[in-house]
Length: 91
Image (cartoon, rainbow, N blue to C red; front, top):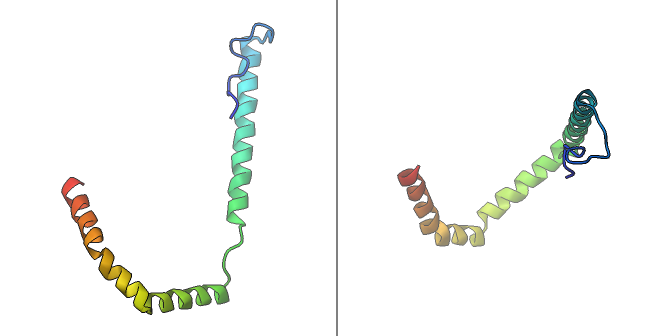
């Protein structure tokens, strides 16, 4: 990201303090507009529809019911328990 104060340290710009303030204000305004546009894009991003949500939930339920999932949960149980104990002791 370019330096927000690009005119500082340059003798050839010849900006007065008022011009520098206006320039900084415009840079800030440009940044705010850009962030607002990013937020608008994120809000309108493709989300799952109701039927897709049901399909994903069904796939998740079948995965959790599988033998492989249950075996993995049993194998990782000591690690997960140690992590919880560590958080409670230190936090």
